Image 1 (cartoon, one colour):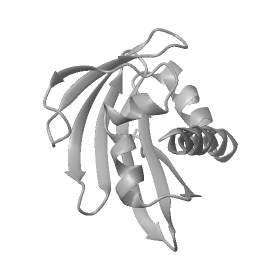
Image 2: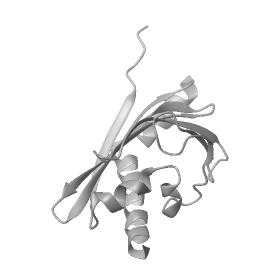
Image 3: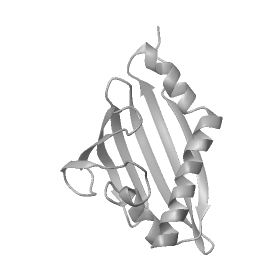
Image 4: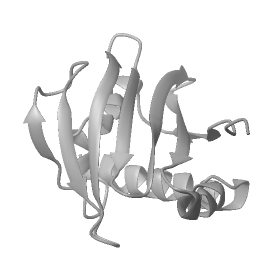
Length: 149
């Protein structure tokens, strides 16, 4: 049997701040300023390609290991490969584009369940309804963080 294609979804939103202000919030350290429960343990590097860090989900204590696969601050692009132990593996791509006086942010997740029992989780998480809610949480938290800085 042929393997199925990885599941992917992408959503965008606009923020009333420049990419220069927004983009640093998408590094391992920067995300602490807006993502609840985000507490990365950096194993190597800081932001550049090859940087490795671990996070533990406040929801289910699952450990995720991340590696930066692309870091292009001059183009406001960053990509990560991540493996959520025993669950799923895939890519996260974030791009910021100047949009009028603000910034357009797009977040893409591309995931594969690591065992058949996790395929349903991936499908559900990346369904349009769930993923839209997930990215809306980003937007709301980022608006709050930018309001404080």
